[in-house]
Length: 386
Length: 170
Length: 69
Image (cartoon, rainbow over all chains, first blue to last red; front, side, top):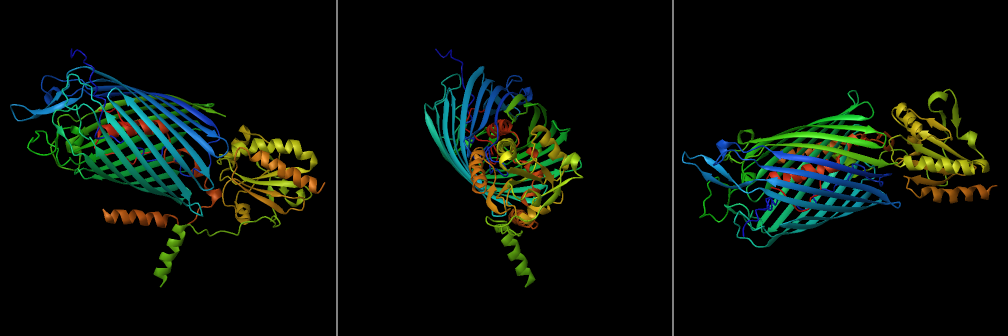
């Protein structure tokens, strides 16, 4: 009986990075292991706005909600090593876009997956790092598991300081193997089992600009190979290959008088699916006294549509997709973080509002009726063993 | 002509050629040092000359150097144990802001002398290549070892070296 | 694009004209001056944006397969 309405919409196969692209624990001058062990626990809630009734067939529809719990541990080992463990549990429920159709008036409207979805994903990531005279090298293994999807990834990274310590050169290589076995539920899917491989390489240089500022430049290449289509979407047939290039820059500037740090990060993305994207992240770390920090942040992302994206797909074409994530739009995210230290404890609070709109992008292209807006909130506690 | 030189200089800088004083090496006599004590007793000063005859660990440190959180308690323990036999630690603080140094010592207090070099003149004269850097001096003030950075088990290694230096001239 | 790139590289090179001595790096050692200041946040945001957008990578977060729609 197809009474098992448990459909997993948790898998965003083609569009996720399941490989480590930038070493998670690379500090600007990571020449020594952490002095003390630290642990952290965090809870986050992610909730998408309902899709407006004007954009759907049959009334407004609720979308996805996710509860996330994260655990983090970083500890020195012997003289020259450190180990880091990151675990996350995600609990997802709700509906997501199934396909886009055209109304009698000629508007594009989205049909949401009908059933209520429930899925859990667990991810474990372990990194061991060795610190030598002027840098460090790390090895990471990650595994992600959920009902219909599993992924194994490994990554290695290394960094080295120049003689005068003004520059740090780093590189990273990663590979992942993913397997999908779609849940045969309410949304008919023709895929029984398939897989994909991802390979990625990254090089970067970080440079001290002055006593108060640093600058970073990075370049990466990613190759995806295998089943990249989304099996839960009705009108979705993607190439089985994808080449991606990323150029990024980062800047950190400390301002003495206000006692704050300005963070600016920029990323340019380009792939052979016709997608071009720019992303800018700006944050202001304002210290308040010696134990508190208030951090407002802003993110702007804009992307071009994939070559084969269309709201009304052409089935005579080799590739087609009506997935909003491959459409052209601009997205703005505004958020605030709060950090407060009490002895060896640290309290973290964050809230973020994300909104996307075709007009906010710098590229033309069709507006997808399924563009998403969401709220994200987080609360967490860290402890340092001194 | 100067354009080419300009670009060459930039290239060299990018490749990391350092442009600072010669680093003090093992076998050399430690350069003279005379600095005011940190904090309340700033009217008093301490010099390396005054410590001649003792085995000295000259430690260049700052509140922001992570490994100093490991080195300070270990150096304090060494000084407590081997002080009577003629061992001393002289810590030279090079923080930009003195308050940061005082806050560090509030959290990790030590009984050995801590002096302040506000102009950061001595680390330049010693040719420090990283923080922290320690110089182990024998009773004549000659550098026996340059200690770059600080790792957890360095206290043990230092202890052996200090005892050896103390015994060789006791 | 290339112009922007070469400007960036130039800035990188010129930025180091004046060497910052090892003992002058106190400000750069501050936690708020690191490339990544919050590991868990970086991982969460990385996962979030990568699963909702077409672009990915360039973040400080590690990825491990995905459950994202």
